[in-house]
Image (tube, rainbow, N blue to C red; front, top):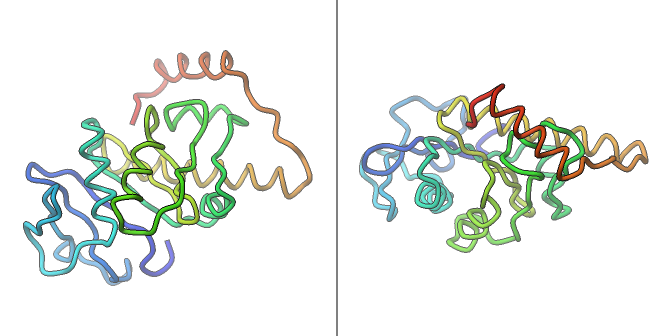
Length: 192
């Protein structure tokens, strides 16, 4: 991600470690991470936690299987989010996000409880969602899994936008076809 956009966290016994606010990733070191309690209290670290700490806390509260959360402003997925559109089931890899689409959460101001609530709603039954006029959130059982899913959402958004740019309407997979994919993924990969 460019500069300071987006944020990353990992669950800890007392809350979660999150990237600090306003520090470019290229300058970040392990000691810059901030440990935050679910209520926002800083448990450790010398910096201010990401302004999106509420979003991370809400995902961890709602999704006990989440061990890590990646929030990006990746270009193509963010472009779709600025149209307030999710990603439809035009490609079978959508199933990696946990459902038949990647939803777009309604807009709310960054860093707010409203954004966190909208995100959790869009993640219902999913592991990734777009945030209107903002970016992407993905979670996983590991940090690597959450990052890989965020990258796949960006790839899917790029493909979807490429189809549209070419003047083509994507042919969507049916619910039955997506169910078959989900069943195949159950044997192929472990959900992240």
